[in-house]
Length: 362
Image (tube, rainbow, N blue to C red; front, side, top):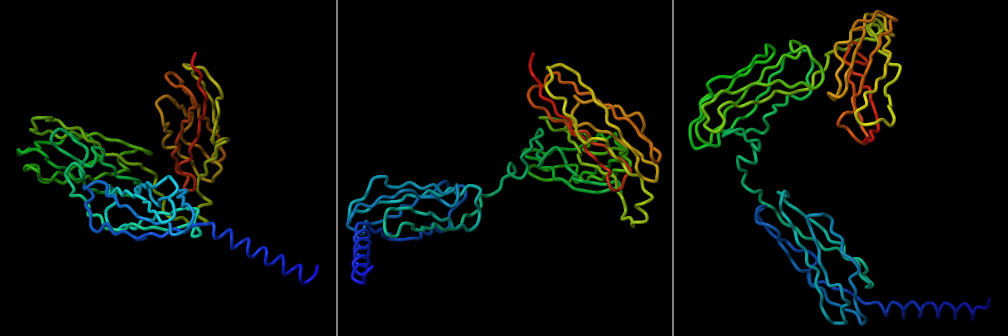
């Protein structure tokens, strides 16, 4: 190819590209950032309109506007904007549940030479004043709590634990707590004060001894507050938690002398069964360790599942059988249930068996 030919092609491409760019328009905004300043969370949605001008010679089209947050909703001119004319992009910001400073962006996609433009809205949201219904959503007569289920979380049998919970009297009268009905020896309850003035709080102190409870997994224990509240004098509240066996840190040599639980399977699929059918299966539990294996508890996740363990104590090498029956009465579709086993195996103290079935209506 000659030098003249190359020169011709280069000039052709240059002028063609230049001509194509001339046909593209340009977009210019009056402002690229808007500061809403300080706004109240309870004040509701605030809006602002970003105004832009078609600074080119051909029609300008806003193809799309993407917000960085679902709390920021944009609207924009959908029709092409002629040369020299203006359009707008309207943005709404919802401060609900967004306390504190904020900086949100809008990405604007156009047919202009500057195809992508970033806009920003900023400000600071003052949190709405908290009310008793916010801090204590659970209503029990004229008393309020975060929840009537006082959750101790994950606890072990190592030692007793203590935790406090708040109680709020929302009424305009004094409410007296006369007594606490508590029949649980492993659970101590103290309330201070026992005379609650209007719009005042009391502290419920819970002391719980998991070892004395002698249970594992999720537990729930009921207590009752005997009060002179005219709305609901007797108030049932619950102490909950998830108990696991405590094991001290053991050396490698100490671990060799411990029991070791082994299941022949970790799951069973009953397949397709008819609603109302009772189906059963058996799992083998083997003590592969060098010390006595003790199975403290077998706990199904559902009352529809019944278990039977033939041996709770297994010598080294001994095998036990865990029979499980699933009752599909009242169930339909795909079902998944779990069986928790709690033992004195320090490396596998809580294996979980999974049961599956697909239930068809008759």
